[in-house]
Image (cartoon, rainbow, N blue to C red; front, side):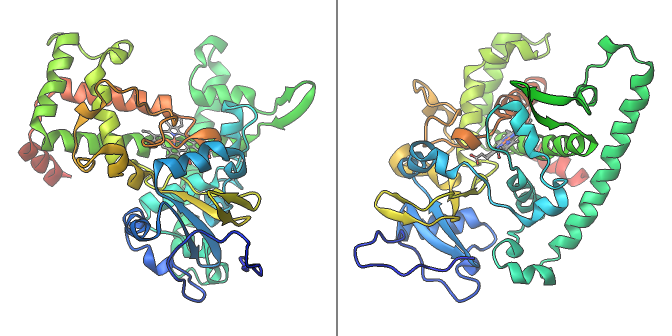
Length: 392
Ligand code: HEM
């Protein structure tokens, strides 16, 4: 738990921040859309702001320069994720962290934050039990109950998928076994080694944890990006027309968009960057944990403080994006080299550094492919969308 240590006069201070209430700290200030509330507070207290969320000290980072300090200059200190309650129920004891270890050798594991991401997006909640642990037992938000029933339902589905694959594997030839679940099953119970040292052995629970990681991390993120982009294109017919023209020039009207041609669509890339700038799917990225007390920009950052990077606020920072930062204007990316890989700290929809999104390429390919097909095959209008929405 967080107990402020006794300060000497010349000790570096915590960053400025709003006064906190007993027990709940600043939790009441987060509101329904925490990224917006934190953005407003950062206007008053600055781009490195300290708060207390229940018993947890938190540092909120809201400018590209500050983000660079935390995610690049001192990346190693902030490369771990906090342990959240969601991981108990939704990540098979956090075995999904293996997914990252398998994909990126040497990276620290610990993916429970992903479930919090899911929780916040799907159940629309900040889990109070993560910040005021003694309230966890009361399940005031009803989240524990929902997480338990969710994880039970998901386990049933995953078991079904795995059993089907195991049944089919018995009669399929080796070269026919080629989907993701087949590959994982073929690795099951085989010790993974590096320099003769056994690193881990993949068991059935690991496979389920990896699959749920994939589902949580990839489907909803890509689908939400596609939705936001399409809705902005509908509100900006000139951008929609320019994108359709680009697609018609590259593919004509008789050919379907194919994956291999996706890298030949510069305007589509600008549209997606602009949409992710204004509507990052994880507006506060995933929280990180400060591993050691440290001094950043003259401020003290306590050990175990939660680091929250407000990518939403950074994407709308007028100092980085000029006064039209709130407008949807894909052309702003023409003649710039700003990309999405996390090196340009004014644009961080996939985070940055060691804990940046390992699925960025897949997410972008899905988003590009689906958007290109939707815009190439159909003429869209806002009345049409209203009509479609009234059917669902
Ligand atoms: C448009 C699609 C996507 C967006 C916008 C997105 C965004 C993000 C963001 C913001 C983070 C947190 C990064 C940080 O804290 O610095 C993250 C983490 C992660 N993403 Fe993605 N993501 C997308 C697609 C995917 C896909 C397709 C996969 C898997 C196939 C994936 C797997 C992960 C994993 C495993 C993490 C946790 C990384 C860690 O804790 O080390 N994501 N993603």
